[in-house]
Length: 213
Image (cartoon, rainbow, N blue to C red; front, side):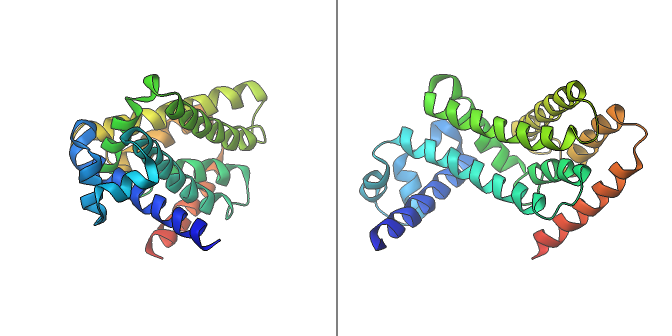
């Protein structure tokens, strides 16, 4: 049991280090040696847990997804209405902690490998499936099934696009602009829905509290 816990702690630590190195130097500049230096250990130590750079980067992608998912979940469990659950997904994907050019650049580096790495594809498929499930479950409670499916797809596509724009260069689309764009999309699809704005304000307030905490 002790060895399993140590293994889990080390793999998470080195996965985080790999993600942080990616955000600084990009995919081509990321090496196992640089990740090891960033984590303060030897290259041999990192390879002992991962075996290869490909596996290390796969776990970096898993780390990033898991961290983001925890942020969304923290909001979802505090949501009381369908609209609050919808805005939990949106706010969670644009948290101050994660939505910035460096982290977005790391995402772009890893996503560029998705077409060539089946394991990366599985990770992204799971991420998109979870987002669709969370959104659709809430949206079918405020609209018909067809509109719920179309809106869930529109939201997820826009989230991906805004993250991509954020990661292309410094000074790209910031968090406030991204959230405004998301709200414009939702507002266009649901123009006469005061409950939406109330839910948005509450989830935004909860996000601020969680960020400070």
